[in-house]
Image (cartoon, rainbow, N blue to C red):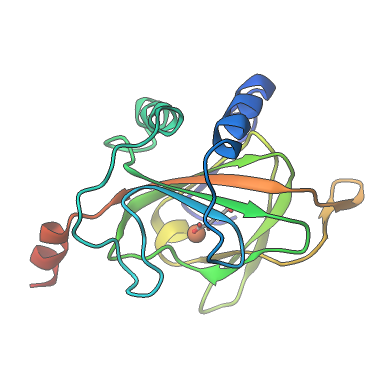
Length: 191
Ligand SMILES: O=C(O)CCC(=O)C(=O)O
Ligand SMILES: [Fe+2]
């Protein structure tokens, strides 16, 4: 068990998954990173590791709808205002990390689409490793230790261990919603 990790199966039904995937696939993708990525709201800059000062453009309708539902469901105390979409082809993953603490708030929520994968949580000190299977339509919410202490990763491989043996991965798309920590709040907290 990873404290602060909540997994909600079937958070989006099949029709909701289909519509969300279509909205995402009709938007232009950035190809500057190894995986294809889309950013909405504040753009996270991987070079300076921050979100910059420019005002954020509003979220597109589909992302605002997800953000509102997450707020109304009680996962966020205000609707999240930053969204990152990641695409993983079979064999691709994301290395172990904690989402940038100075930039993003205490809740990170991801919706999985199209294909399941195993996300791996690792405790940085005792190295406990917890694999968590993310099915299409599921919602993964990280708060507390799951958000701030444990690392999460998706191992770069072409199949995962499922309930009945190894399951080949297909194309997976995830939508991650976060709140941006306002600069003024960061500098007050650091004083
Ligand atoms: O693809 C996912 O489910 C997780 C993505 C992630 O960890 C991130 O963008 O920080
Ligand atoms: Fe992350």
